[in-house]
Amino acid sequence: MKLNVVNQKKIVTELMKGQSFRQIAKKLQVSPSTVSTIATKLKEITIPVTELLLLSNQEFIDTLQTKTVNNIEHCKPLPEFDYINDQMKIRDMTLK
Image 1 (cartoon, helix red, strand yellow):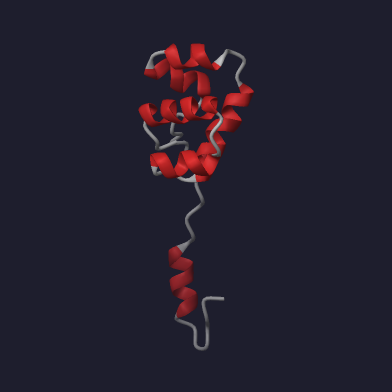
Image 2 (cartoon, one colour):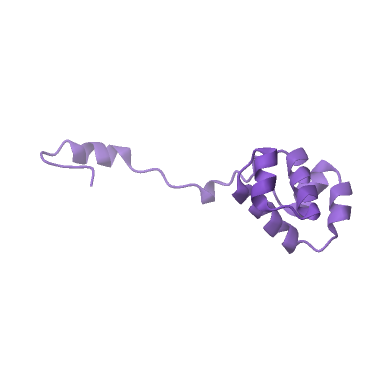
């Protein structure tokens, strides 16, 4: 998640107050789906939210599992540009 830890903690505190996803998103200028994602992750953890907010930034990220993953396996594969280039040289060939 590209959102910094301070804003993630603000989202958690606003969720504790009972505000809606849209209200929080508008207040913090983030997407409602981002708020929804954090709310879903809050339901998955076992420690109380008050203790979660007292954790350090790194412990907060580890507990809530909102770290940005730079795993190549989850990326889309690149197309074979050489093959596409060769095919596009054929007469009446389209990208389809």
